[in-house]
Image 1 (cartoon, one colour):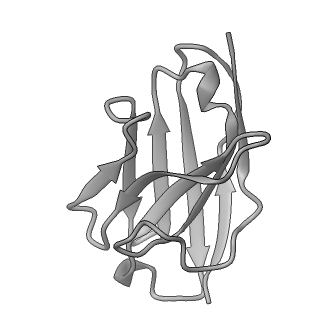
Image 2 (cartoon, one colour; image 1 turned 90 degrees about the horizontal axis):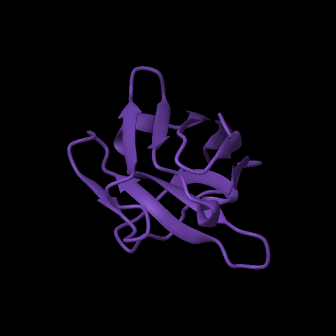
Image 3 (tube, one colour; image 1 turned 60 degrees about the vertical axis):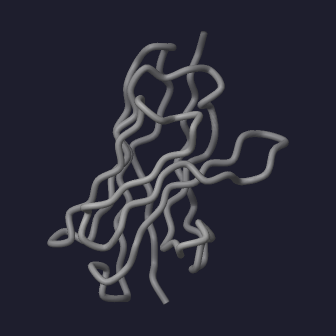
Length: 119
């Protein structure tokens, strides 16, 4: 089992940027693909971005492609999400998790980090 702690959220104006971090422990972090997900009020949790174990392959939801960048530092057991050109519709609680080829999360969820984008 892996423990996940997200941080870096906050309140930002539309067009602004934030960088989220996710610290993982309890498992060999570098062996697993990692993903970011988000859940807006009243909506189901949705996939945002995925990065493979080495960081050499990434995939994004169409809604964030070209604006968000996922990366990882296996030496620090940390995955990041750089979010640029933020929009009000990006407002959500953001979560990280280990992820499989079908973009499904594999471990228990952390507490998430709130991102609020004002118009």
